[in-house]
Length: 391
Image (tube, rainbow, N blue to C red):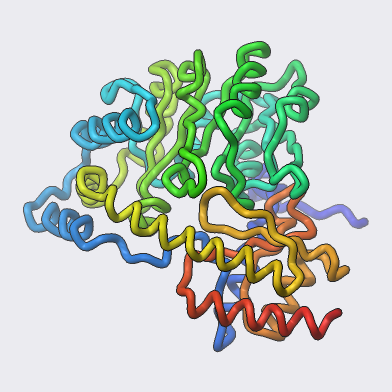
């Protein structure tokens, strides 16, 4: 295989990072008509009106200046109150909370705050496509370990311990998981917590889908004994509150970790948009009924998709959270890339090939059920027709 010539004008690190595997399918789909997209990982609900109204009101009242670097103190107080009531984690709003430009920024500055060149971060895969590149951009080394459908895409402490070396600095977890929808119980996470304590590791816990847990209450990793000091807890408003385009997240961590992340945030982004922060205030104060309404709708769609995939011959585990189904396409003999491309071109259904989510994702496709029941019913019909053609 010929060596790729690097552009001397550009960073070697950036050039060696692979582009997002999701983007190619979005680009293809954007040029086609009559597309049903199960690829986009965002709610199909519009942000509730009272949240939009609060943001509009902030503009009308002239609240358009920078906020404190860490975010409005009023918002940080609401975040800590919300997290305490909903997930039994307790943080100081002045020293342990940072409002970020989406949960992605929180992960980025968290990695850059803790990693030295060559430090290793264990990534549990399949996982969100940004984790590995963000580790690499921070100078770290991503060590991937895979999960599988036989174990409901849960990771075991034994798997993680086998990947720990003298260079391991942190573990990256995301439950409920994107793309599999997998969840873990408190007892299962406690075994990982024991490892973190034994080997003196930090844990990134991406809990952006915490509110979208269907069958069991979500257990925050930071709520486990002695884990608050070791956990960088990441969440935000995009998924549960239907606020993806607002780009507003937050990170909770002990004061030393938070101060380091705040330093990076100060120099790179200054602060999150003020009008989005005022909208988030309203979401936290009056949005719990909206969350429950959306969650019940997603659960209904989840049940439909899992049942329907089984009926057309695509085995699919029941996701415990998030809004993704992750059916197996192994029996078709096609790679996930081939399956997704053929399905898009022949039946106009856009899904995401599982391999883009890392080890364990191959042989699956990610299907977001955050779309209308009409679209879901039509997509199942089209996928079923496609399967009959290729078998």
